[in-house]
Amino acid sequence: MSNLDLAVIGNCNVAALLDAHARIVWGCFPRFDGDPAFCALLAGTDEPKAGFYEVELTDCRRAEQRYLPNTAIVETLLHDGNGGSVRILDFSPRLEQYGRAFRPMMLVRTITPLHGSPRVCIRLRPLGSYGSVEPTQTWGSNHIRYVLPEVTLRLTTDASITSVLEERFFVLDETLTLVLGPDETLPDAPGHLGRQFYDQTLHYWEGWTRGLSIPFDWQEAVIRAAITLKLCTFEDTGAVVAALTTSIPEAPGSGRNWDYRFCWVRDAYFVVHALNHLGATKTMEQFLHYVVNIASGAAEGKLQPVYGISGRARLTETTVASLPGYRGMGPVRVGNDAFAQTQHDVYGSIVLAATQYFFDQRLTRRGDLASFHRLERLGDRAAQLYDQPDAGLWEYRGRQRVHTFSSVMCWAACDRLARVAQYLGVDDRAEYWRTTADRIHAEVSKRGWNERLGAFTESFGRDELDASLLLLRHLGFLRADDPRFASTVKAIEGALVRGRHTFRYAAADDFGMPETAFNICNFWYIDALVDLGRVEEARERFEHMLSCRNACGLLSEDVHPETHELWGNFPQTYSMVGIIKVAARLSRSWEDAL
Picture 1 (tube, one colour):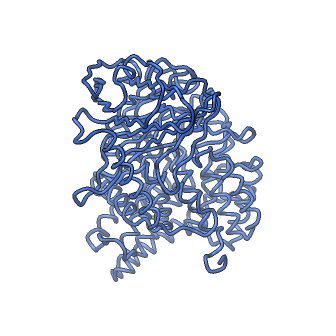
Picture 2: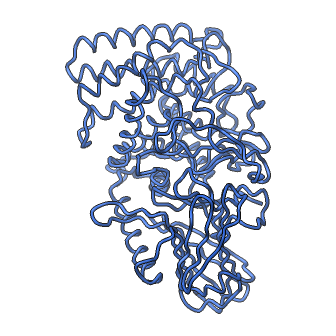
Picture 3: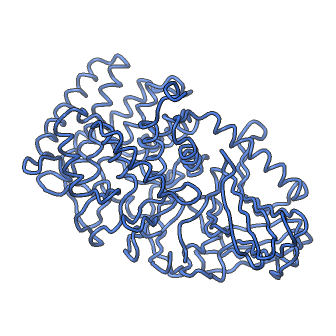
């Protein structure tokens, strides 16, 4: 049965997902939001006829898979019943060339015999137009071209072209290299080029990892989360996608199937916060550049919640009839109509993220008075909209309310603008934004507080609780020792914490009652426990969350609270950010540990 026990390879331009036997089941070209030439993940069956790229070992009895330490290179060992075994290495080249990053639309695979006389079969079956079109094939002495509607892929290899074309089993008696990339002639033999790309890609990732500032405890988990976050970055623009997939349902048969291959503005603050913890300043600065460009181009300062990785605004949502969906649980959606929703928290998200520009002296592009005035347009919108209905951060499609979290984020926009103005020495603007922030704070404190429940609630004047309000201390709206924070956490515990997992909310929405827990909410809850001094409890819950990762250390968006099975789009940026953030808070210092 299909599952999310997947590894991701990539180079910040393209990415692919591999199952435990090294079968590539998802990969979009020519970039993250492109047509999935490998779409078997959404084929609705465990034995799809196409949409994958695999190496089958005769009589395979066992598979082992891991990342090479501190890299995005995946090693898979396959063992047969006669003592034979093969080693498969998968990666996407990422290296420095001519003084700049080289990240081609390319996947490299090597197959090496380890023991015995293993027999293998190579099957490369891409599809186009979301699984509806088979490619036209042409070939030469060392390559096969797969002509698809949106892209032409070329496989160049030192394996037998006939064996690949006819999918014949053969005895693997030497290392073979397969380079799948653009329709271009390689400058060197595939074996030599593959070794060169491997060495340089290994060097790149090991060097990038060495530059990270990581906590003493849970180093492996943080490094894997950091690399995964990097792999979800479209480096050409700096955008970070919410996930690399579309339409993995949040719960079995729920219809909560969305396309996450885009950049959500609200993620900006959380991603920047995590990258800052890691000291990944270049990646952080590229992402900041993306979000500030988005804000600068917003007419009258009006922002939408989500944009394409190029900055494209319109992401019209359609359904695809040609793919049955994950385990047959459609629909498969392309695009996301959330782009047209009203979500007021986005103004705070952009301002919180952009504040880094003004205070972080490591950045090559620093905030100045002109950029501050551009941000003020967003503050003006926040001040106008903080008490107006919106769809909220959970993107309800069937209703609008004055969501407390959105109001708090509008306050945060004004609060941070006051701090930036004071830092820049613009006293009149500092006073204006401080007065505005204080006024909004007082109003939210009055209207968002539910005296009967002793908690801030999901929206003004209502009783429902919302896990986003676990962030009230983190955002600076309340102090950790404010009794209202402790009582809000207590109320959320009673309503939304189920065992060792946390739900976003517990009320029916457009699709009924939620069935799975949202991973980032559990990380928010763990963070709140630390704020309240419940550190040992927080550590135990964090260890449990780490145990919910798949075999390669990755998390999706959701987890079933009873079976602990992963659901939702994969790998989920929010979830990986949660690992980084909580590990940094809970870890012993290097000085104390050594």
